[in-house]
Length: 402
Image (cartoon, rainbow, N blue to C red; front, top):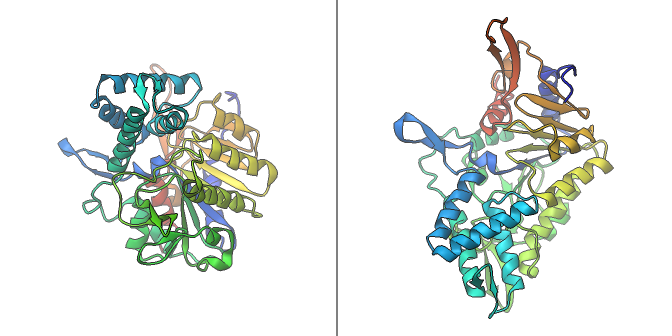
């Protein structure tokens, strides 16, 4: 970022976003990552609060600790996989560890040893990671505040009228989105049909006449869910939805295809994201996602290159480094708007936010920060808070007041 670059106008950026969201004829979708789940906070010791579901780093620490409890050789294997992730430029988080363990299982023979573990021991470690993820993302929801962010998001949804259904893509395994939508009595379709054991119906994602109407919100869980499981029925394997399953059988962060039963939900949701982005004038709003999934990144950035009227708003909780991959890619695509705390990338240019007095509609998502350097004059800077999912949902809810 050039230090002399003109600052970005936060009011115009947020006004444009609000205008996009207010349009009734625009194809609009949201993409939610782990940051949206950890925005739900509950009371903790000392009068403080903590995330109901920890962010990826916290989840990884818990999974690593559980793996170490299996024995020293499992802890050493975890450390080795961490090293492999780093060597390949990947974040050694629980999801990437799980993906690598599954690749190891498919590659090793029954009598072979890999990273000091035999095949059954690798399977044991994979099961440990899977069950840890399922346990951590399935907390007791009875004690969460009634105005948790996902419910505020649902309140905005229920007060909008659309010609096209709102679509929510998420890589989260929890049921916070479902909980928020159901609390506001919003009809939701997730690709499963039936009532006894709802089964996955891929045709409903490809053909609009096979799905409910525009007043039903779509929810596509791209990496699986704690509520999915596989069953054998009449000699066929089906993916069905039910109560949360702490075995985490259908938690599937990688896009490797083992067999048709595993492939189908993820392939269908990936195709659905591509189809959405190919619509003329489509708008995708990304929240709580750090763009660490290269498969999804390629879908989004490829669509932005081929569809100049498709736009993406990437709302970032943390400031993005100017030399990072997201900044570089956004700098090459004028139809991608990245909103970080200190800077934004608009029209391919990264710059700070102008320190302006904000109107009331920006109160939840923008603030002025003042600092006085030693021996100097006070200076003001603008700071965006919309990358915090809780603040973003406050912003949405403010659109429906009055």
